Length: 512
Image (tube, rainbow, N blue to C red; front, side, top):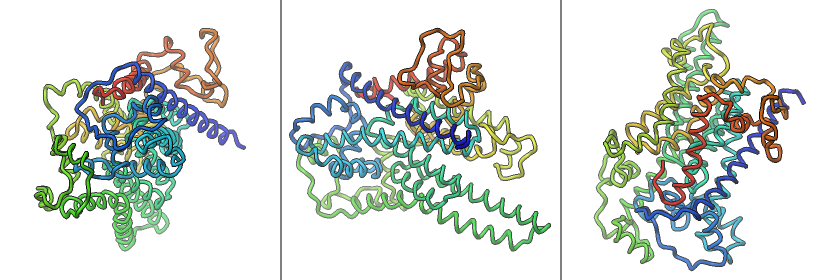
């Protein structure tokens, strides 16, 4: 095996180790914090339990109950009962479907000891832990292809394992599933396995609505490849024939439409299902206890005897848009109120990192960005690292999500919105660490099994079970007092949000 392959294999093993360790630590901490801190009485969706608790239900509730709070209640309710209330349609079906499948298959032998709800909560812990490890490995492989820098790829993924959106990656939310599908799909796309990438990115749309934006990657990279073929043809022929341009244009339009359809189709099918459910309701039996909850809270259920919802008369009857508007008051500039200043402060760190990423990239490649990354590359443009040409489309994607999140969403959601959708947050964090942290200039930190303590480091600092081998982020945390102020700010942000999210969210306290 070549030294290069040995390094890559060691890096992947380091990523798997650290991702697994952070998942186990997160599960342990949420259980402790949920037991120690009393739950806040929040006005959140809280459907009544339909089954009498069985032997192991109190145990599962004590260990993993913090994973089922806030929006996780919706996902678990959908997995258990299906789409009964109108506002349930804000939560896309792929994640509840996976939970349900696990609960009725692999966890079926426990049905004598656990109710369906208990098995679904246990499924949340299992599914999201496994998916997070998969997403971390996919992000590493994607990063190697895009940034062309093994060191940056490794440090960026280790930072991902400490993501500030940590609680949403472990709780019953679809963020981890979305990250795993998106990063894996983009990795396949970079390797030009386009059909496989379309399938994964399409499934990502089945998990979260913002998966629609991923169609931009398929369209942009298809256009890049078409232009590259045209340039290669012109070099071989000495001139460019117009029919070749026309053929490439037709090919791009047809393949681009085909690729985009893969990504958009799950969203359209889900909206059609919602339209049929509420605009053309059939006789369905809703348990009385759930009907009582609907009457008490003002939830709408599909009922042929009730008036047709107003959104059914829209030219394009999108239930998702209606729910965001009517139930969560989501819209352009609606969150720009004085009382929302604390939420803007919560979102400020991730917004700053996002703007820094865009600024640094444009500053390094102004002409390249002016031509939208489609013109000829200059002689001085970097071919590796954060500022290389392949990062351009990811910067655009991150910037679009960032601006949309600030102006048209509940801004505190911006942290998990970006952290589960874009690798740029982790690439820029790693890039800044390399730029401003002298400790990372030590080449021995990036040799397999070669992280060693320096002579001037405090004696006795050893990582348990060799966890620190080839793990530069843990190394920096151990040498906190020696780190630069930039490193402390970045790591401090990641670690504080990582921990505070577990403490607050798992106890029904407001968080991002």
